[in-house]
Image (cartoon, rainbow, N blue to C red):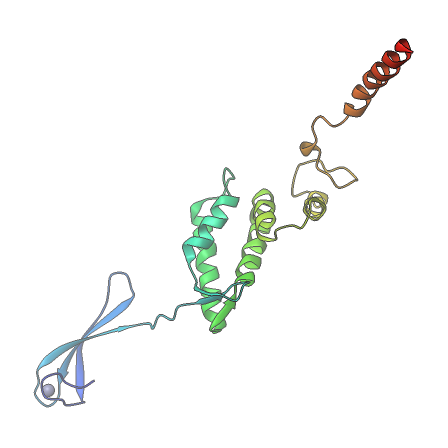
Length: 193
Ligand SMILES: [Zn+2]
């Protein structure tokens, strides 16, 4: 490091201190030639993680966006913020470690789904239903069914693949309407002729 006073390259470090947040090292140096002192700071180079979206647009990775998506899925579930933050730490670390300049957004979605699957089945299904954009109810219910068969979700799913909770009053409905209709149509016309 060049001395700011005389331009000499050689110096000795007289003091070395880590900043309170641990992100920076501050070094006091003394020039070998003019013996004056100066300070240097050292920190890790921050390279932004770029996310390649489905429509080929690029965006800087935003931790808060992933957090809010996960929080929405975890609403009213017994999942602490600490647990979510530790997943985000892990995710960010993994993304940095790949060394890739661009990371497909799908990788983040898949990682979040995989994590939620092991944490809370309900939150997982919520997240997956938004993230995967299930094409139709059939896809969604087959996902539910596979979870239910593993015992992850205490909901009842019948053999046709539909969740009971979604059709609370369908049973018995057709039978109740039909006889009324038949009576009205048959009785009325026959009486007039
Ligand atoms: Zn000097």
